[in-house]
Every structure is written in C-alpha cells, then in structure tokens.
Length: 280
Image (cartoon, rainbow, N blue to C red; front, side, top):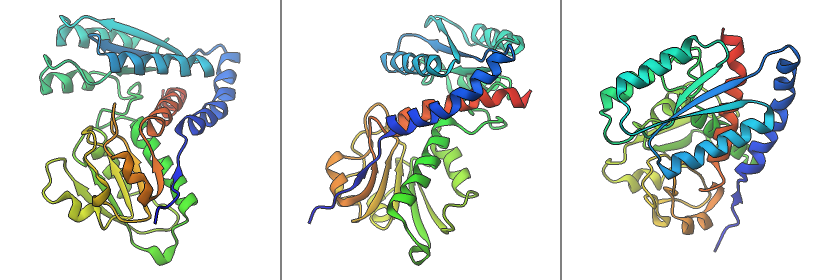
C-alpha cells in the first residue's frame, strides 16, 4: 500500500527565513552598515553560475550585496590567495566564499590552501575547520531534520532514532556528522550510522534507518528497495538527487531535489553573513 509522504517545500521554508532576516539587515542599514558577500568563481561551471545567480537574487531580497568575482581557468592558486588576502582586509566585505567545486586543474592541496586563506571571521561558508560559522548546507539539513521530526512526530518510544548519513566523509557529510553527535533533537537519542559512497552493503544499513541523509552527489544511489516504510528522506544530492524519486512512496517525509535543502542553504548563508558583524 502506498503512503502519502510529506513533501518538504524548501523554497517556502527559505523564503520565510529571509523574511525574518530582512528587518535585522534593515537595522544595520539605518546604522550606516551595508552587508556585502564576496563570492569567487573560477571558470564557467554552469551549475556554479546558476547557484551564484540565486545567491545574488536572494541577497538582494534582504539587502545583502553579493559581489561576484569571476576568475579565469588560468588563475593560479597564488593569484587567488592574494585576492582573498585583499578581501580579508577590506572592511566593506563581511563574508568571503569560494564557489565549489573548483576546476579539476586544482590539486586538493591547492584547494585547501585557498579555503584556509580566508579569514575565519569572514568564512561564512564554514569551510575552514576553525570557521566561526556552521556550513550553510549543514545548517539547512539540521533545520529541515528538526522540522521533519515535528511533522512525523517520532516519540521517545522510537528511541534510539537511527540516522544514516551516506557520504559521511565528504565536504558536507563530515561537518554534518560532527553536529549530529552533539545536537539534541526533540529529546531523541540519535544512533548514527556513517557510510561512505564506497561502503560495502550500503542497503544493509539504510534498510534499518529511521532517517536517511544522503549527500554523495551520486544520482540515484539510494533505491526504493534500500529503505524501510515510514523513513524520513533528506536528499542533499547536487545537481541531481541521490535518492530515486520512486522511493518517496515508502517515506513519511521527503526533502526532495530540487526544491529541498538547496534553497534553505542559501537562506542559511545569508544568515551567516548577517551574523558576521557580531564576530568582529
């Protein structure tokens, strides 16, 4: 028998967050303070450019300037780091982020050097290990997870709540796992399962999970036969979903792709930019 899952509307949720944020930004403006986010993009990745356009649009809605700095594929690590250092000392810039992924021509060690060159007080994307901010995608996942628990209303009798993170060693998965180990949700005890994209017998673990959060970027990795009835599904795949859409009929709550975590991530980024004033 088919279930009728709650399909999360990330666009509506994000818009409500931005509406709540705007009065704070307006207050800053009255005090003569303008918020600015500098977002660097190297090359012309279509997905990255679309994401930047969305950030710029949402920033304008609340009064945060998003300054896009476009760099060519020929830009060296040294040139990018020097640019970031200048932005670090620019008092008109509140937040700095580098649009990921960087082109394949950059080695992993170069990517780390670039990210680590951002001042921790301006690392609103939360990519540095000592960043003052929660990674916006992680923040979005945690908020949607908490929202889902209010919809599904798991109770203490469901303890422990088994949460399976697929992609636990990735850019999003790693900080997400750290937060899940410390944050409380509706007095539920979290039993955490951490899986890598290359983990063996993934379905053996996903079939027992009350909540599946998949952030691998591998389209269709999670299939209908790999989940149990009534599961909460939070899909963080990009640009396509990690979870096959025909799996939704078995779920109690679904955050889909597109329109789920993505819009909320942008709203969380704008919140981080506003919070940057308190970190100075």
